[in-house]
Image (cartoon, rainbow, N blue to C red; front, side):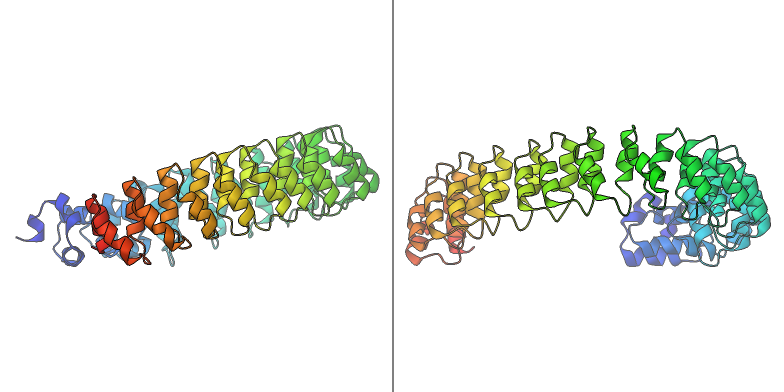
Length: 465
């Protein structure tokens, strides 16, 4: 039987060597190649992408992952002659992959320019090395995403910059407003643009002229003012006014400047809006006293902002350990370097999950482990039985636990006293006896007992079979 006689649906289950042979046969049929295009081995799929008999639709699918192979397919020129708009039937991601391939031919660029999918034309608009004619054509595209991509190009002629600066779409104008080569007169028109996002884009410019800053400070849009408030090169009066603005988002943004006067920090700690206090909590120069106060803030968002930091004083960590949110306390319980005071609070946490996480901490200490070994929740006690730091005395206690799962965990611990093996070998729970039977340090008399166990699995474990 030849490969051409096989059901194409069965070709995906061929071994790799057989599939590679089939895909490399010069006379492989379109049906065979279609079947092999779904083969799990990437080498097989790459061979299909290079085969001249592979159907156009299959090539279109494979081009997304194998653009270089499709481009060297010897049948591609004939396919282009038969279908002048060949790439119009290719999925958008495949055309983009071909466009981005190394040494992609010019006809790919031309086809991308005419492709109906806007994502293809957007990818083309951002591609370096396009001819001025193609860039100019894309700047006239009906899709705003394409014109926006053109507006972000490094090599954009001034005429196109001015054209796109007057675009009907604010996203296009916003992209132009961020250009480093923006002519001064165009920049000033953006200061009074009809859309706040465009004016905010201008407000971010490092080279923003002083008169433009002052003009934007009179803006009525909170997003524009918030963007401006982050700057530290504003006139002192303007900056102070923004820092005490009636809109909380502007006050919070003023705290994100590179440097902030200490008086602003003190004022922000008492701000009525939680977003302002959260912004303060993220400042690297917030004092330990401030962080401690914010860690106990009444607002959850403020406490979460404090939680993001890695330099908290112990009192702040302690406050977070008492937070009403379970996941905040869980985060604290998992952190490194907790003080004994914080650990003492957390081992009494009402949530068993948090106590369970604590149980496996290597720095918990014997006293706290013993406390958790007497926990009301068996999951916590089992975690103690699994914890590497648990000592012999605690394991002895856990080996007599009322919960079989706890006893099973204790039975496997490397620190289990050997004299306890006798007790556990007589345990009424099959799982406990099975755990003891698998110990590497099993005492011979205990092994003899387990070899006579009523359970076959226990006997087999003790025998090492």
